[in-house]
Image (cartoon, rainbow, N blue to C red; front, side, top):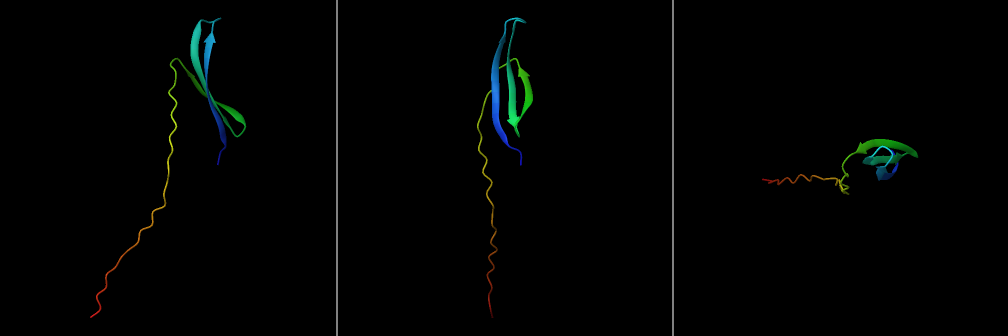
Length: 65
C-alpha cells in the first residue's frame, strides 16, 4: 500500500504576473505529486469510512417426526 504522508494547499500571490491561485500537491512514498492549481480555494473535508465484515448465520428450524 502507498504511504501518503501530507496533502498541501498553498495560496500563491504572484505579484510579478498579477496572479492569485492555489497550488495543490501531496507527498506519496517520499515524493511530491502535483495535483494542480486552482483559481478558487478548494474545500477540505475529512471523511472516515469503516468497513465491517458481515457474518451471515443461517438458522434452520428442523422438525423431527
